[in-house]
Length: 174
Image (tube, rainbow, N blue to C red):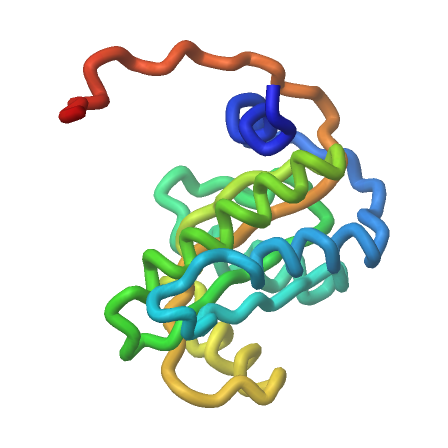
């Protein structure tokens, strides 16, 4: 089977990570894959904030937890890396473009034997005053909306459970 199709069919979300650090060069490869995602009119508007610094990672985790209806202490499942994806608020395709970035990064992580998972609440995190302060500290100007967090790390347990796809989801007109 084609390598890309295989990755699409076998990538699974990881929700239990080892605390081992992910090498910077692998993080950069995952981020670069995100930057090559398709975008409306080729504008390449989404941005990625790559965080492996423990203090900043824990701050994002605490902010995310603040808005987590499940009240998890660590909604990032101990993953040592967080890739926050944001896009300009004024873009009508912000969520679409940012979602493609996240999808590319998760597939790239899988291809590098790194676990990943999409974590929601980035919108709330970066609407929060602490989230806005983080953006400001990075020199990020303008109005951005948080699309999602892609967490990365080495899986503590490998999930190979491929759930069969539901029937009746494709309507063909040939």
